Image (cartoon, rainbow, N blue to C red; front, side, top):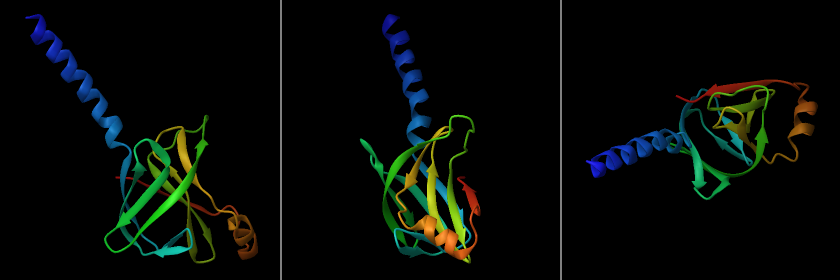
Length: 134
């Protein structure tokens, strides 16, 4: 009887952990072409996930015809909770991936050294688009 209770408890713990693992992969439909690390990815369906489970700084964006690997830094939003999503900055008619939110208050930010100058040069500062994961 004790073995049965232990097995049931272990199964419940394992089941509770599965959603946390599944959240590291997001499925999104992105309705516009966008740029990641200087590479243009076309509008379409994408999966976004950590590339290495023990190092969450490297991410993969994988679509039907396009993919990119990106290096990110941690970003925190202690006051505002985010749904799993991607945030893009729009400069003119171009979109640039800026952040990945895979947790309510913790996300990943791409290293965009020249983005601020580009946004200011295009005259479209503070134009952000958020695409929620399915």
